[in-house]
Amino acid sequence: MKRWPMRAARSRAQWRLAALAMSGAVALGAACTTADGTDGDSTRAPTRGAQLGAIAPGLASRTLDGEPVSLDALRGSPVLLNVWATWCHPCRDEIPVLEALHREHAPHGLQLVGVSIDDAGRTSDIRRFASEFGVTYTIWHDPDQRVMPSFSVIGVPTTFLIGRDGRLLWRK
Image 1: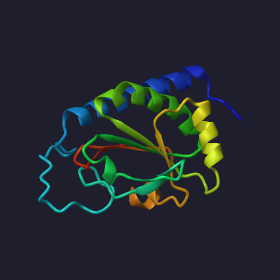
Image 2: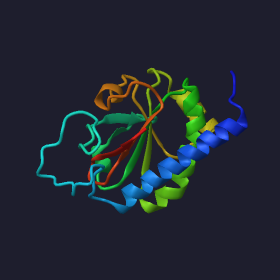
Image 3: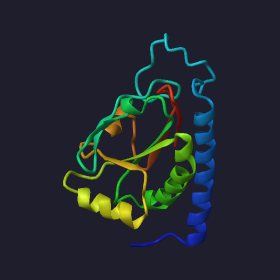
């Protein structure tokens, strides 16, 4: 397995950390403001799909222990939702950055959720990967990859910032 040179990985990681941290600050500070600058009026019908400013699509999954979880249960907290897989090499660069964000912003209410799209039966591989990278944030397993069409994900890693009101604020 080829590793990226540390200098290049570090600069990519620093850039991602800065971008995600700024986005996290926006979510924590602007509970009812959408990406388009509107007031987040809940009387408007949300647009369909994973569009910025729209209500995030519903997503239900399971933890690595098999417990049911959903985005709806996290409503009221800003959520950084990262779609990834153990076989994804760019994900390996991004996981430490996400872990740093989690440690810094979780005490302020940010919920960081990693959604693994690894195949069914790969739970032990996901656990081993998380352990190797020191992941302490929540990991959901979506072996059916329902997150992909729901959030219009065409590749991993893909990360979404969801505001306290459930609206998509940012996508990378």
